[in-house]
Amino acid sequence: MADIQKLVTMLNELDDQLVNCMRCGMCQAVCPVFTETGREADVARGKISLLDGLAHEILKDPKGVKDKLDRCLLCGTCQANCPSGVHVLDIFLKARAILTGYFGLSPAKRAIFRQLLTRPELFNKLTSFGSKFQGLFAKPVNDVLGTSCARFQAPVIADRHFPRLADKAFHKIAPAMDQPAGSSGKRVAFFPGCMVDKVYPKVGQAVLKVLAHHGVGVFMPHGQACCGIPALSSGDRDSFEKMVGTNAELFANADFDYIITPCATCSATLKDIWPTMVDDEGLKARIAPVSAKVLDISEFLVDVLGVTALEGASGKKVTYHDPCHLRNSLHVTAQPRTVIKATGNASFVELPNAATCCGCGGSFSLQHYDISKKIGDLKAKSVEDSGAETLATSCPACMMQISDRLSQRGHSVPVKHVVEVYADSLG
View (cartoon, rainbow, N blue to C red):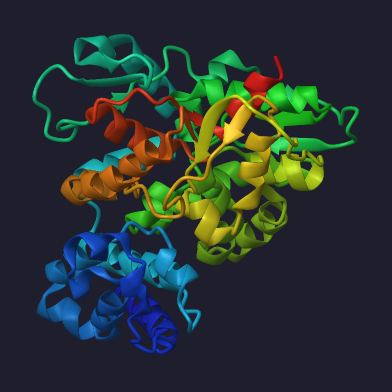
C-alpha cells in the first residue's frame, strides 16, 4: 500500500479537477461502453460522481470503486466532446494510480510491468523465445488476416482470433540506425513501439521504406522500452516513469527534427501523457523537448514532407478507421486519409462511423472481452457496409482488434497500416 500522505496528495489533486464537471451527461451520447451497457456507472459522468467522494468510497467499498473505474476504454471520446473541457483521461489515470496505491498490483501485472516491460532486453528475449514455440499452442484460422486461435482452452485468450508473434522481431530485422539528414534535409528519430516490433514488423519496414524514398535520415537506437501506457493505465506510475526514463536516455540528447511513430497510442503517450503524468521534475525537463517533436507518421508525411492526395486515383477500395488516440487526443484525422489518397492506386471510401472506438482499449479487452467484442462487431459491420477491399488504420492495437472481429465473422478483408498501403504503392 502506498504512503498515506502520498495518497492524500493525489486525492487532493483529483478534487481540483473534478469540480469542472457540470454533470450535463453529454458523455452518454458518445461513450462506446455506455452504448452497450446503458449503465450510468460506465460513463464518464457516473465515474466522476463516484470519484467525487473517493476518500469516503475507498473506505466504504474500495473494490467496487476499482471495478467501475476499470470499465473504461480510455478512448478519450468523452473528453473530446466535453463542453466543459474536463480532462477525463487525466482524472481516470490519476484515480487508477490512487487505487493501485491502495490495493497494490496483481502478481501478473507486477511481473509483466516490473520484470518485463521495464527490462527491454529480457522482454525481447522472452518474446523471441515464445515466437519459436507458439505453434504448439496456436493454429492459423485466416491466412488473409493473419489470425490464429488457441489449440487448447485458455482463459486469457478465450475464443480470440489473434495475430501471432512475428518469427523475427523488427529490432532483429532492422539494424540500429544513426543516419544524417538525407535529400529532404530532415532527420527523424523512429520509435516503432512494442506491437510493431514484436507483432507487426512489416509496419516498421514500411516506415523505413517510405523514409528512404523521401530522403529522410533516421536515428533509431536499439534498446527502446515500451512507451509506458500499459503500466500507467493499470495505475503503476513507478514502472511508467522507469520506462520513460529508459527512453529518455536514448532520445533526450540526440539530434533530430522530429520523433515519429506508426502507433497512435505511442504517439499520444509520448506527446501528451509523458509531459503531464511524469512526476519526477528532472525527468519531466529531459523529456519535454522530445515530446514537443512527436508526430504520427502520416502527420510527418503530409505536414512536413508535403505528400498530397492524387486526383482521379482509382483501384481497390480502401477505407480508414480513426484510432481513438490519434483522433481524440492528437486531432489527427485528415493526414492518414491524404496518405491513402496519395497512393494513386487506391479508391478511398469513407468508413461509416469511422470515428467510433473499435473496442480494444488495451487491458480492457482482457478484463471485459464480452463488451469489447460487441463494440468491435459494430466496427466490423461498418467495414462490411463500406464495401472496402482493404481496411487501413494507424494503430497496431486497432489492427489486432478489427482483425479479430472480421476473422470471427468469416471475412477476409485485409487489415493494414496506412503506411503499408503507401509503401506498397512505391513499388
